[in-house]
Image (cartoon, rainbow, N blue to C red; front, side):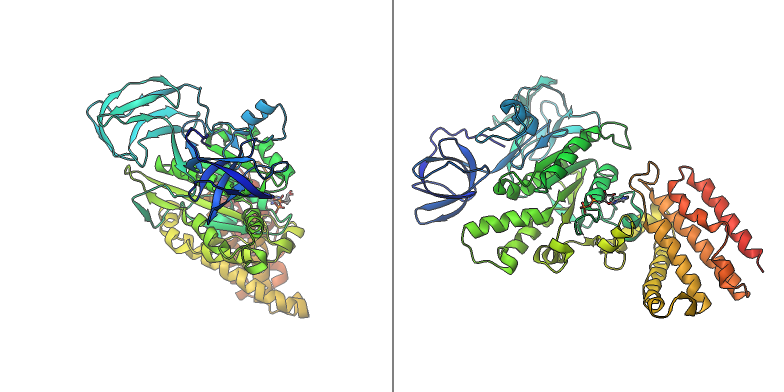
Length: 585
Ligand code: ADP
């Protein structure tokens, strides 16, 4: 986060303090200006100006701050520092690096009034120019490359608000982010870092229709409810239903170049888990540390409420910056409910007219402004990049009718409904296949058909039909018992059981099963379909259903997930199932 630099800043006087909300008089300020509040200089942001009174939300604990103390205006909007050094970093909601803060204060508890730049200003990076003297460059163009981490090349770009010009000086070498690396004939000096106001989306040429899936390696997601690269998804679920595990799986396995993980106000120990876990993990695809492509923003519930409100914007701005470089970025927000609660708290302090369940009337607008920043974009420098946004929602009591879930549902195009009953039955991931949906299915099918298999959508539809039929049959079974059903329906229940156990269920903690490539996802379905087709033939030929549901070979279907050499295993299994069934008539 940028520090206050302006010396001639206008100074006001605190009039009142109510938790994170402070009012000041005589402050010459505009909306969203960053201000420093009180003798300790706590960071805040202007959120309302009425008459001579300016209302400020403060990003730090305000106890001990009182009327009469000064408020200093920086005249700048709340911005993030963008440049090499963001990956591998762990920030708080206003982009203060946690490790730097901890070192400064010698404690894990954040003090007040401590500021630190979002990126290391002293570290030197090796800059490799991509332009030469005489080249014309304009806003967004890549002028050079820095190896930010082992995994990611950081593209140094002309800032979006630049008028561009002709390069008059550029040289490779080691530079800090503040050094000039390229000079233009207009006199503009380009360095490796730029600032961007967090509440303003970064410019792009065009938002396009996404056509590629964000492969997650989770069968139920890729197979039934896929999200596009540049898409939006929500994961609502009650406590203990697997939101965190699902988000972690996505952070680890999704085929995004960059992951931005925003923890907004989950309980402190959960976020600590993330902070401790992530740096230990390896990127399964490259073997490099996962953090080499990850930026963590951690705002625990004991951090001030206003910082929770801003962490979402900090996260999405960082995501957009990497998108501008041409990368596919996945942003996970865990959880947007805590973010909405922060909004509610600030709104009530402001004594605004409350909407549904006390949330501010602008809840829905804020949610959609956030999710709208996702997308598959043509960037101003001619590259394409995407930001996919996956938001966890934690509805109190798991009740999806509450405002945050409902408003989110109106916006996102993929809905992964976690289900407490499934979790209780140890069906993981506990994604309810009847309630979940993806509006990207049709637009992603061509990609799957071209890159995985031609019958991708056809066989998926078959599986959906069987699962639907099972739901209907279950109601009857509960009334009259399974044996009262006709034989073909009993067989359908058995097929559906395999769909649930071998296809929908997946163990995140098994070294092989944790990631399932789309090819394997598809082959599991074809195995169950083989069983289905052969068993119905046998049934037609007069084989009793009891025999068809007690084969020796079929239990092996449930073991496909954990097979590393699955192709051979599946081929053999299909042969055995076919042979066993055909031998019965
Ligand atoms: P939440 O974040 O919704 O409170 P968690 O993500 O912490 O829930 O999940 C609770 C527990 O459920 C985990 O500790 C784990 O034992 C189990 N679990 C969830 N998802 C999976 C999965 N995909 N595979 C195996 N176990 C899972």
